[in-house]
Image (cartoon, rainbow, N blue to C red):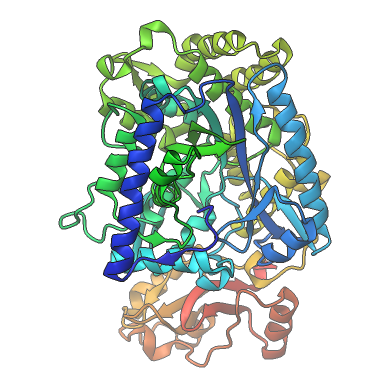
Length: 614
């Protein structure tokens, strides 16, 4: 979505003109490949650093455009969410200390981002999914106020013709029906680019697919969203479902989601990969910036293939094929899109070095990988890694092997040889690959986050625990100490959180609910068995209709337990919003002489706040 001025494809005339440019772009690419016009050397690397913009309380902020203005640097650009921004690094030649140079460049830019954010009472956080995200942050009111995002949103909704259905099951479960594409904004990535020799592009692309599962397993960093513990890398499932244009798997014409790993090994040339995408996925957007690519070639100019790039920007393969023009020369590259942002900048660069090293070090025994491994095993490896991280058991070379054994015994030596062959400095190789090695025997980002979340839940609410985790990551994200060296932390010792406590900080969401028509005898026993003093009462629409208290039962005695709950419950309720200051909750409870406040949104019960919760 690098094109700023886009419009939705609607009229037959617009569609015909766009398809005409798209076909001519493919023809032009074929000619450039045939005539040896695509740059073969030197090889360059680059990265896209996505990050979150939060308030001083570490909650998603909605001021990315103001922060962008304060930063005032062309390396920065917007993302779909008003709490996201992105850095585009300068391309670097693949040699010497290029990776530490890239880290220094990104460090300087992130320092600049932090300074700009600070001027807008905000902070910058590196993380795959911001732990403090809440359902309210995926509404269209949090979409960046730029036409291209709204156009994309409308185009995807029009293609699907029904709401997006999200279902992810891990330790917890997320079931969600959503009416826009803002769930995409929950995903924050560190996208790595490697320029590829055009003559071996398909070979290298297939190798990139083969190593994707093992690389992802060591990099996972996004196990939690909306307080639920899901996949080790929840981004993979969330992004796939958040912009899926297929309304029904039994009637859809597109057999793949627009976010996909792929259907099979690639064959032919890079143009054939693009042809396959165009065949599978209908164009959604158009632009008025198209050129006649064949005409430009005839005039001795290098075309930008704008129509092809626009289509490619709406097909989100986890390993994406990219065409670009730099310094007047066209080149091809693979964009590795599955690596999450964070938890530290050094961790991100280590992930990149591991991936690039594997790409460069592909041994002869793994040439023609499409003839040696089953694609379904490779695809299954990727999704198993997303679910299980370093606990994954891979099928590799038709054998079952643990993530730890595969990475330590086979893949790290391959990556090291690849980097040495490219004459990367020994300092960079040792610094970054040693991080991967340590992580394989200690913990990666998702393991660290889950361990701390569970530990903090022992004496904090989920909401407060996630706020503390986010604060810890922010404090340490630009330090040299990487996540493999992070341990369980005590937030009271080293974190300074600007906390203005709201009801959500203290409310209890793990509640038993009873129906207003339930037997009073049964409910009274439940309250005794569970030692519960307050039970929220709901109707068939799951709306809060009353509250049954221990006091109600004491007044009733044992005489009329044949009644229904609604016959004795308290119906005239004092309620509060989860966004209200905690002090307001205290004031209400004292003023009305009550010990329980239901927390509601409209008529929906979100939690309860009792005297003991203070």
